[in-house]
Amino acid sequence: MFGLPRMMFTEEHDLFRQSVRDFIAKEITPFNDEWEKQKMVSRESWLKLGENGFLGIQAPEELGGMNIQDFRYNAILIEELGLSGCSGPAIGYPLHSDIVLPYILHYATEEAKKKYVPKMVSGEYIGAVAMTEPGAGSDLQGMRTSAEDKGDHYLINGSKTFITNGYLSDVVVVAVKTDPSKGAKGISLVLIDREMPGFSKGKPFEKVGLHAQDTCELFFEDVKVPKENLLGKEGDGFKYLMTELAQERLVVALAAVALGEYMLDETVTYVKERKAFSKSLSEFQNTRFKLAEMTAALEQGRIYCDQLVMLHNEKKLDPAMASAAKYNMTELQCKVADECVQLHGGYGYMWEYGVARAYADARVQRIYAGTNEIMKELIARKILK
Ligand SMILES: Cc1cc2nc3c(=O)[nH]c(=O)nc-3n(C[C@H](O)[C@H](O)[C@H](O)COP(=O)(O)OP(=O)(O)OC[C@H]3O[C@@H](n4cnc5c(N)ncnc54)[C@H](O)[C@@H]3O)c2cc1C
Image (cartoon, rainbow, N blue to C red; front, side, top):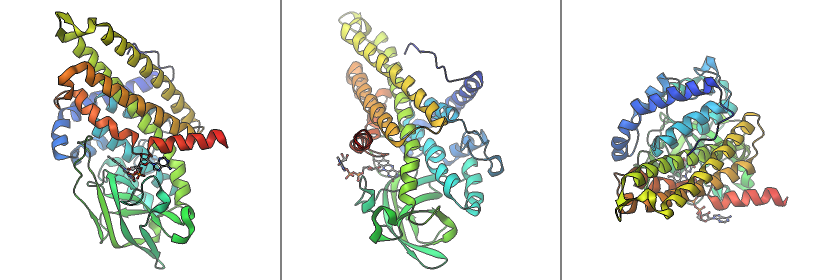
């Protein structure tokens, strides 16, 4: 990367970036290999992030946060995690702060906010969001997890799958059917916490990539959820999901560009060192052109994402724009991953090499947070309306 100036960042942002970078170098990168083997990051790492003020920075001060309503700071955290190449942490921590927490801050009752937000900011409680079910992913309206109205509580039955942070989760935003006859309007969101009897978790899945990340199934068997744990209004869950998914998709796009840059940096270093036919790989025209193509595309992607972050700060990022960013940047990330592995030759296929892991980790970015086919549907719906 030759580094176009990032006009949107001030000196304060740069100082924050440096503190995040130092923290990652000390507290995340050295542990990533171990976490990959354990299939999850450590609980201590969550507490350390909390101690350093890197979780839920947008939460109000009275709930333990810093009341930072400037998404550039969130973007810096996501970007620096991505640039470290630690893909598991780059997905799991932002999911907690930028995807789960907003549901609680925007829609939870005051009691629920007081109960969960301070613990999520300190890292004592880890958050997850559970929409997908074994029989319903893209087609969320087909979900079956039921919430029966029992007066002062709901009785929840069903299961969710592929839940990021699921195994370690302490509080989960769960999409349920409060009225199965009403399609999207019968979907509501509730907060389920680890203490509730009847809530259990499967073992972390054996995934192709994102090994330092606990993805698992969640089971609900007659779980009594008090009505105070309903988010917003009954029946409005789908609306809230559609609103909040814009930020989720921006987060995925930001991580995609940063992880792409990480792979490119690794590859630039590698091709300068590796020799073939008595030359450095970097002297072959194919190598030079591939690096140039990737640099040009990532520079463009980065500036595009910067623009979207600023739009989001002004509350002008609409769901179709966020879908376009998620689609565009994750396709780019996967293309970069493939080219970088190719430029590494056989070493690019060895787990000890950063690009090999980044290649495996990249693939799912086109699948979760809404598949890229669904992103294209959302974009088409907007331009054809
Ligand atoms: C590692 C990982 C982490 C995840 N984390 C979470 C999480 O934290 N919370 C959560 O709720 N979910 C999570 N998911 C689930 C993820 O969001 C879903 O897998 C995804 O939405 C796709 O759903 P599905 O797997 O059921 O595939 P399906 O919906 O069955 O799709 C299969 C294929 O059909 C295509 N398809 C489906 N409908 C259409 C259509 N209308 N037009 C064109 N093509 C279509 C899809 O694009 C895809 O290619 C995670 C998944 C993974 C793998």
